[in-house]
Every structure is written in C-alpha cells, then in structure tokens.
Image (cartoon, rainbow, N blue to C red; front, side, top):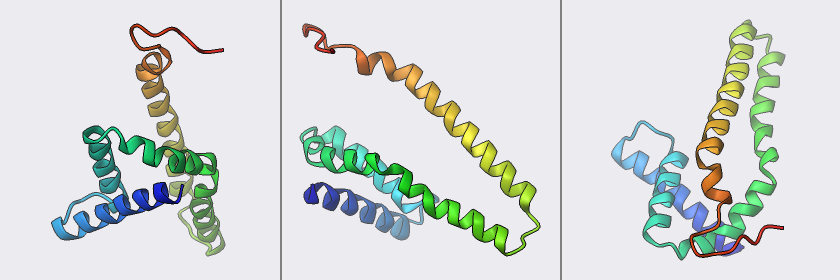
Length: 124
C-alpha cells in the first residue's frame, strides 16, 4: 500500500510541476490526476499498483471534507457579511455534484455491472 501512496503522491507532484512550469490554468492535483489517467490507459498494470491505496483513500474520503467545513466555520466566526453567497455556493455546488455523479453513474453503471463478453455473471 505504501507503494500505491508513493505513486499517487508522485503524480500529484508531477501535476504541480506541470502547472508551475507550463502555467496551466488548472490546479496541480487535477493535472496530476489527468496524468495518472493517461498512465493508467498507457500501462494497465499500473492499476494493480495503485488500486489498494486508492481504495483505502476512498474508505476515508469523508475526512477530506473537514478542511472545507473548518473554512466555512472560520468564515462565520470572522463575522463575514457574505453568508448568502457562501450558503448559495455550498448548496449549488452540492446539488451540481450530486447531479453530475448521478449522470455519470447512469451513463456508465451498466458497463460496470455487466460481465465481459464470454464470462459468466459471478455476482452473488
């Protein structure tokens, strides 16, 4: 699993470097994820290396929302007069995320659940 985290961190650092050197208008981690996607397509065996680490991160995904929550609470504590804008952006981004997730699941869900041609269905 340590190897998986090292690979994921290396791609994040690669993304940060690409953004810095090329002046790309995207966050470094996003560029790193795109580089990881390209590497996974080019070298399918890389999937076996990063799978365990990625699954472990996904199991604890809710912890990654803590910094955003702390930022919202800190903005409230500072007496910010932008509560309407903050509330609207939180609500809108949550609804947009749910909608996009539902559309992606609807589009790709049948491909994920379906057995490969020539294979039997092993779901229990």
